[in-house]
Image 1 (tube, rainbow, N blue to C red):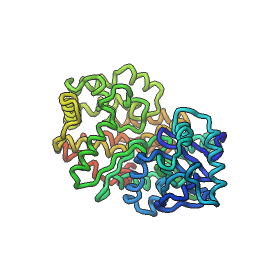
Image 2 (cartoon, one colour; image 1 turned 30 degrees about the vertical axis):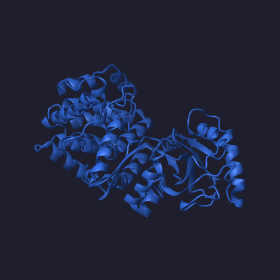
Image 3 (cartoon, rainbow, N blue to C red; image 1 turned 180 degrees about the horizontal axis):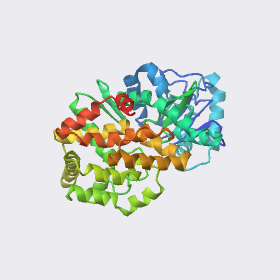
Length: 436
């Protein structure tokens, strides 16, 4: 790449591979800082107030060291980055010179590396921090491109995916079932899920914890901040970004919540709200070009879910949350039912959204997969009991998993609180195993 050691950037951080950017000689070291030529890690320079390291530390607590090394692009160490005033130790000087040269050769503008170049002149050792993060082999997007380039048979690809899903689901649910911490990654799109070959199988993991929600259980102050940040993260008080479209990592109910706020539909009856959403011109336009199962099946979800009182009640609670926010002009305190609803929506970012992202990428492999999705879903919502298609690709299980996870919370005859907490506590691996 033209940037040399610089391998990528985001809004928040500039990422360099070997040689990793060295620590300032005077820096306090947290964790371990591997050798600069270590190919198993990358260095990421972010501003001092960046919260990703905080979330990565929580992720390490939740999974433990062994699972973190396997399933996360996890935090290995942290320090202050060297610069021209605060130089590295002598044997890291060559790495520093190389990295500095490569950084200033980086041409793209508008994100973290450009900002880092500007900050470097004033010195970054006191204003930035350096994170050493485990390196993953390829993103989901890159892996799909590799599969297409190598023309690997689709059935083989999806068979490998299906074998890798149970362990992935087990890891994902650990983040919202942990005894003391609850950590939700809100940004698990195709560039933040990684794929690793393990023999003839594949393994999924997650990276980039820049956009997360974290709370300490049984801590009222932490929980209040958690719910307040959840509302802000869902952008229900911002009309500029239509998160109900184009963002596969956004949970199904969060899309409805945002659409309701954007279009001032909090006083409409639930039937009007959902019909407005499904028939929205931009949503319809998106449906013609989208690989997003939540958009493709939106008409199915509408027709199916509006028959169930619990779904109607769910919509009414979400509308009530919006009414409170608009009336008070600030994020209000929530009652018990509202907290349960928000908690449920938040956990869907880990339980469902990553599989939505995965299906979206798989559909790029062949038009026949899109056709298969529509046929499987039509049968599912028509109540037609069908066996796994003998001549299908194997994507049946992925599609059925999402459809079941979207509809199951609302088909219960109990209370809404009981239904949501029951689905939230379910073993995702058991749901997957039950799909035959």
